[in-house]
Image (cartoon, rainbow, N blue to C red; front, side):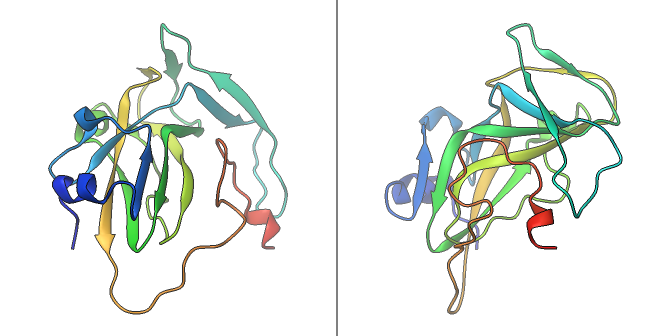
Length: 171
């Protein structure tokens, strides 16, 4: 089951934490998350799964930043979220997708107990200008059935910003 917007609001401060929270971003069954002004790009291909790949920070200026196809931009949400007893997921907003902008390639699935900012894997199909503070994606919550283990991985838990891939730590 997916929680309604009213249920999301009701559970704030218990098993759902969103900071900052703005009721204007609440939808019938999701909550819109905003794009932070910081981005990362990988310095140079080819990327190597077994190594730490160097990144370069970018800042989205007030006049926006032009994204180019063929480049992966890592961003993050303005909002910090924490979820207990529910499975959080993020998806792009349809208005954003209709401009050819993807906000996650495959990593929209969160784990029960995740706490942190959402790292976004931003990719565009044609050049597009983006702006910090735009409501770029939405978070929604599924209930979970049965016994479960809470997410406790130190890899992405309690992050303080954008996180490039840490896959190399597993290999």
